[in-house]
Every structure is written in C-alpha cells, then in structure tokens.
Image (cartoon, rainbow, N blue to C red; front, side):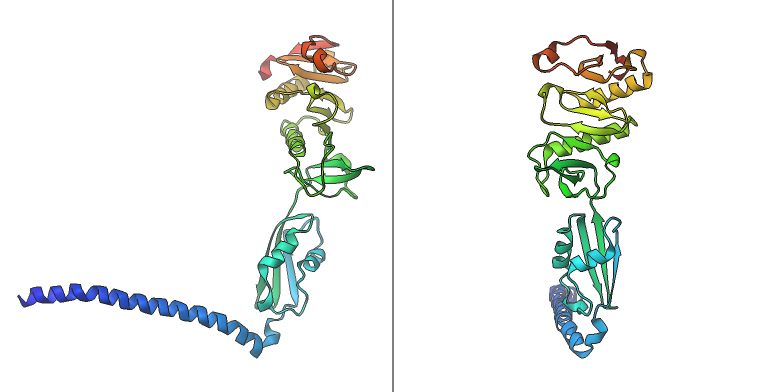
Length: 283
C-alpha cells in the first residue's frame, strides 16, 4: 500500500515540476531579452568609440562602384553600429536603379557589410520623344539609361510605344524571352525584336545576325517555330542564300522572300515566295 501511495504522489508532483520549470525557462528568456534591450544602449554610453563604423565592405557589386553604394546607403562614417536600421538602409539601396536586392549588416567590430544583387541588362528599348535608350532587365522593366553601353551586346526591342521607365511591361518581357530563346539555340544573335506596331499578323519578328535577316514568326508556338528556324539555318539550303526574309507563319512550310512579307489577310493565305521548304525535322 505504501508503494502505491508513493507512486500516486510522484504522478501528482510531475505536473507541478513541469509548470515550475516552464516558469523558470520563461523568466530566463524574458531576462535575456530585457538584458539585451538594456545592454546595447548601456554599451553605447560606456564605450561609444568602440562601436563607431569606420569601414564598409561591398559584396556583389560589378556594375556599380562600391563608393556609390556606400553613399547611397546613407550610413556615414562615425555612425554607431547600434544605431543602424538595417531594413531602412536596405530599402534605400534597392531604390538604386541597378540594385534588385540588398542586405546590410553592421558589426560591432566597426565594419558595415553591404551585400547586393545587381540587375542584369537583357535588352534595350527606346522611350519617349525624342527617344532615349534604356536598359531592360529580364522582367521587362526599363531600369537605367543605356549610356556608354555597347548596343551590339543587347537586342533592341521595338514596338512598345507605351513603355515607361521603372515600370515592367509584358511586351518587353516577351521580347527578352524571345531573344534568350534564340541564344539558347545558338542562332545568330537577335539584333532587333519587334513585339508591337506594324502588321499584327507578322508579330513577333526578328532581325538576326550582322545581315539583320528578317524572320517573321507570327502567332502560335514560338518554341516550335524557333526549332524549325534552327533546323533551316543549319541545313543551309540553297534557296535561303539570297533571301532577305524567312517567314515561319505557315505551319511546317518555311517561306523565303527577297522582299517584304505580305500583310493582313494576304499573309494568312500566302503560300509562295522566292522559295519554300518543309521543316519536317523540327515538327
């Protein structure tokens, strides 16, 4: 009987011990948080010079000078590491045209670490009248002037009349995607990509390579059409030699032309040209 009574007593005491330990743990956490809250200001008062930022390191910047980013951060030399609002500083850095992500970490060793991710220039677009060249990122946002940029390195997207700086545009994003699809197939570089304006039956259309040969894609499955284009260029067909235009709007038929492609209803019924070929291998 005594043994059973002892077991019941132990079972009854267990919840009380658990509650007591939970109270101790909560009190410890609260004490640490309060101590941290009070300790940092106390440190700043007792040893202010030990936490003054005097150096900055920038990681991830390639296009933008480190000095420019440190200036854009708004954190001046002599600022206390304890007074830096990392979130606010990161937001200021992201407002820079070339920066898409930023993280700021002040160290009590008197150093400010700035880590950034820069935008990638994927294309160029002309905006306004008179027009000004802007760089476009992969999401279709014109983000910075194309000053001093080698325009041969990026395709120019044409036909987006309502493009606005710092605002993404779906047609610009489409133009970037088409140019990249051309690159993936190792075709001659897309010098120009028209995604708006002109004859809607011919859009989108490309100008490829140094000759700026015109490639009319039209609507439909662009991936299939670009696969067919890659097959045709690789085949190096004789009738393609003098052609200034390659028209891919007619299913498996590839039309070569020496003049401009037909427009409107004429385009939907066209079946001829300087020459034609079946692109059967590309589907």
